[in-house]
Length: 101
View 1 (tube, rainbow, N blue to C red):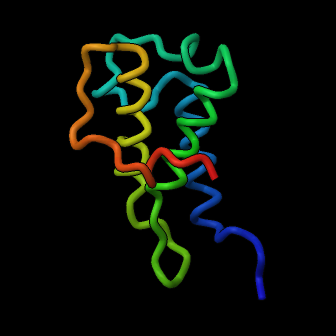
View 2: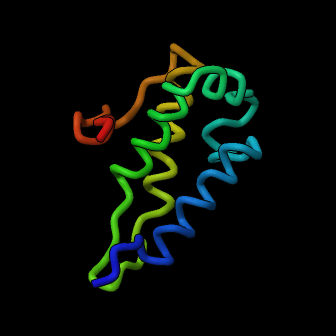
């Protein structure tokens, strides 16, 4: 039995990390928002962003990611909410989406 994450999942996580570090996470939703200082100043905010991404990410029976864009968008919504208190997340986060495992 293979105990590693499927290649597609690892690639999706790597790409997500690149977007966060590069300042290009969901360019449309976060246009004009310099989120990096806010979420990278303390580990807990960055931890929450990755938790949301990982909790929302889905894979099929072959281990292929089926909703990278949706997982990235939900994480970006949380970032926007942190940086812009007037932003309303729609739909609101479900408890399972923000759970830290």
